[in-house]
Structure formats: structure tokens, C-alpha cells
Image (cartoon, rainbow, N blue to C red; front, top):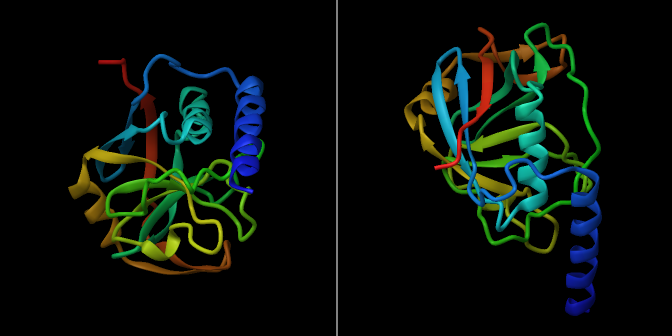
Length: 194
């Protein structure tokens, strides 16, 4: 069974990567700078352990699709989530859902970046989140988890500041934990390889 699952993953990975041309393919640990209304965050992505997720994220970065989006879900000690809505709470266009790489060995630990998804396993597309605590409940176990694909290398203090912002129920979204003052992801930039 395990060999069959590995084979399925390899075939799925190959077909998914064939659809999307890899961005900065020779850089195994690309870095992305996220300029927010609260300061700058830099993340280092792990293409070795999460190649599909990294290429998906980088596609949104280099096309400018993360620019001028908001962090719409903020829970201190848990997550800072964004990438899906503009400042007027209008959903941004989404690409295809991607294969869930949550079994890659990376854990939902403090200051890691992971993909948000629906309850079904392979439903991640553009929304991502930062872990603001060691969220072991989001790791895979008997069920699929949430795919971690990198970690913060600069700007942990910025994330902590975002996590402390006042939140409330937002009637437009119909959700709790929405920052009262919008927190903007002004620009996401793929940094040159080192």
C-alpha cells in the first residue's frame, strides 16, 4: 500500500508540475519578501519537501496576485491568515486546487508558513497562513493535515504585532477573528537567489 501511495504521489507531482512551469527552478530554498502595512516579513520556502506548494505560492507572488490583499483571519497564539481577499473583502481569483503535501515532514510550528484549505484534503489554492504557535493539531495523523512549505527568516516581530491586532465579527465575510483595521499585504516579491 505504501509503495502504491508513493507512486501515486510521484505521478501526481509530475503531472502537476508539467502544468505549471517551475519558477526559479534551480533555487531549492527561494525567499519571498512580504511588505505589509505593519512591516516586512521574509520567508524561506522549501522546494525539496513541498515542490508543488512552493511553485503554486510563487506563481501568485510573481504574477502580483498577492499584492494589495489582506490578512483576514488573525488569532493570537494560533494563526495569521491571508492571501484571499482585497481590502474591500472581495475574493481574489483562484487557480486550481493543489495536491496536499502535508506528509512532507515539515510541522506546523511557530513562524512556519502553510497552505489553508477546506475540510477536504486537496483544496488548497491561494490562501496561506503563518503559525503563531506550535499547532500540532494541524499536522497530518489519521487524517490529512495542512501543508507547511517554509518558515519566516525575518519579521517575526511584525507577525507578533499583526497577531495582537483587535479583531471582531465581520458581517460582510460572516466570520469571527477579522482585524478591525485592515492589515494589508502591500507587495510580495521573489528575492534574487543567493
